[in-house]
Image (cartoon, rainbow, N blue to C red; front, side, top):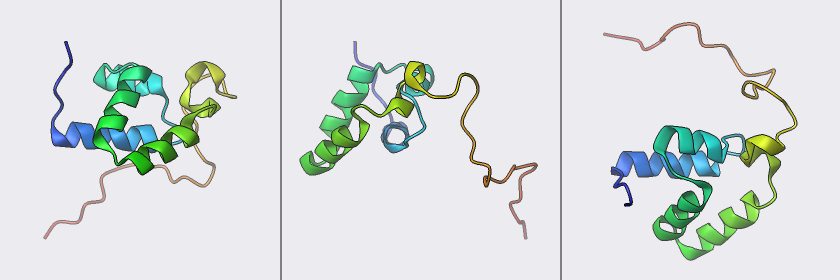
Length: 92
């Protein structure tokens, strides 16, 4: 049985699939989709040329598979990435 996703959830899955450092395991944890399910969703939701570009980019990329990552635990964080300490939404 295939789960139906909202437009927002589908967009988020596609966004996560395009992100280099987001693993297929993270997508499975959040949305319950295996790698093959993500590939099928991408094929169905994207233009053929975009899908081919994504597949070429993802194949062999060690960061998309948690067991192939060069770091052991936690999540990769760039040294230049700012730490968010509180919500900075300005209110009127």
